[in-house]
Every structure is written in structure tokens, then in C-alpha cells.
Length: 79
Image 1 (cartoon, rainbow, N blue to C red):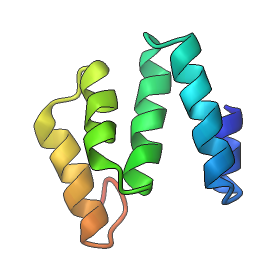
Image 2 (image 1 turned 135 degrees about the horizontal axis):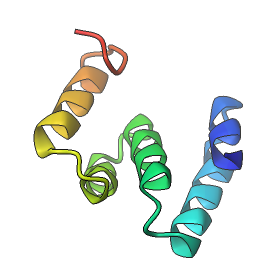
Image 3 (image 1 turned 90 degrees about the horizontal axis):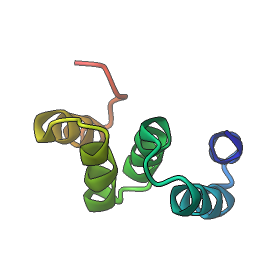
Image 4 (image 1 turned 45 degrees about the horizontal axis):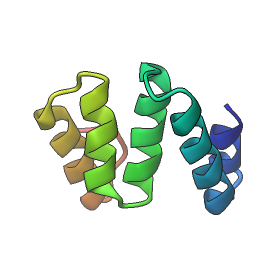
């Protein structure tokens, strides 16, 4: 949760450190992996984001849709 707060505050390097630590400590947490994937998409680290999303069972099509939306300047969930 702390990483999400730091991301919202614009402290992306702090958020990254906390996400990475959380993933090391609890790598099988699907909610964490989902949040980490979304964060990585926001940082345009799409390959890493796909790995996090794949962990929680999201299909490649959904990951590609998120990436395509971000690249088009939209927000997730908007068509």
C-alpha cells in the first residue's frame, strides 16, 4: 500500500523500491503483482508489466490493451 501512496505523490523511485521489496518478500501475492504491473505500465516498462500481469492470470490480450491505451494517451478502461 505504501508504494501506491508514493506513486500517487509522484515519488516513483520510492514507489519502485517498495514494490520491488514487496515482490521479493511476497512474490506469490496476485494483488501485489497486479498493482506492480499497473505501476510498471505507468513507467512504460511494458515487458516487466506483462510478466507481473501474466502471474495473476491475465491474458496477453488484456495486457496489450492496457499498453495500447497508454500509448494512445488514454486511461485504463476507456475505449
